[in-house]
Image 1 (spheres, rainbow, N blue to C red):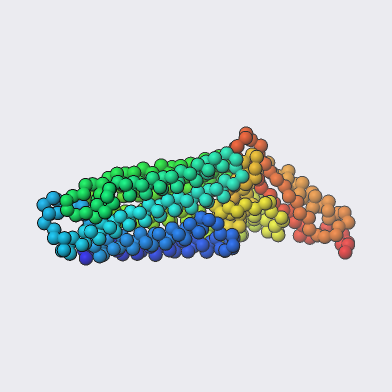
Image 2 (spheres, rainbow, N blue to C red):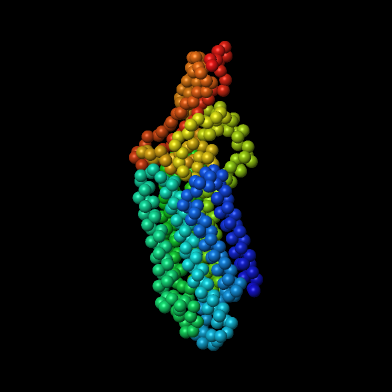
Length: 411
């Protein structure tokens, strides 16, 4: 086994282990915040995608470790004629070509399973936003249609199908799975187009939102991961078409790398709250939140030290959801009150009248005969803008910690 093949094998299993870790963190984050019973279809699809990714890695391993990177391409007509059908090289090339066919089908299936995860996730994310229903509806049509189209190209580009592992005579480029021009270009085009479509779902919503710029930038970067996936897809295509004829294993190399990047990016919205929670604790943000209560510029939602009052209708969202981001802020359309849950927001000077009213109400309740020491107030701030635009809804609770001096408490 060559040194390059040995390095690739280590890379394959290293990426595989890292992917398992990422998927495991996803399920841990989901289970710890929502519970196992709250798992959605994208969680099930991710489990299937993990199995397919494992099979793809095994196929890539077989191409390099067992079939020595050989396939039915990279041969002259004279070399094809000189290979004995009973020889080891013949068997290696036939088996290598068959494994390439399997690997490409697994690669395509994995990529589109991950796209299905995004569609299901975005359907929850945009639930209640009337304008987005049509976009999600078309996504549910476009993704399976493009997947079936890729499968049709894989099965119909070479007829009869068994010519894809034919050695002599030359079956033609379309029947060489490791370097097939039509399949490589078509899959890359469909992959790139669908990635653009998927990114067009959350990015405009985040851009038009009233989230703080730091939060908005974080979400924009997280949902723009499709650009990185597209870059790997293009590099895979270029590598196969340029050096694939001399190194058939290039197809397996870049398929595994792109698959790993796609798995990580698809799980990023689910595991990001977990990492952020660790970072927040390390920075001791609880102290900063308490000190921020007296800031004239406002305070972060969820930072009030008293017990929180009743929350508005929670959304089954996890990008990240309010339980993981420590906030009750939601991005909603002007007609409905659902969609993206945010991490934090500041209530500025315009909100101070609400706070003053809450404090006055608490004081009045203390001066009158009372039956409890707790007063809960819910205040909602809503920016009325044009239809289908995005506003922020916030809520907070004002609690009275002590009773007024000189006041007798009534039982």
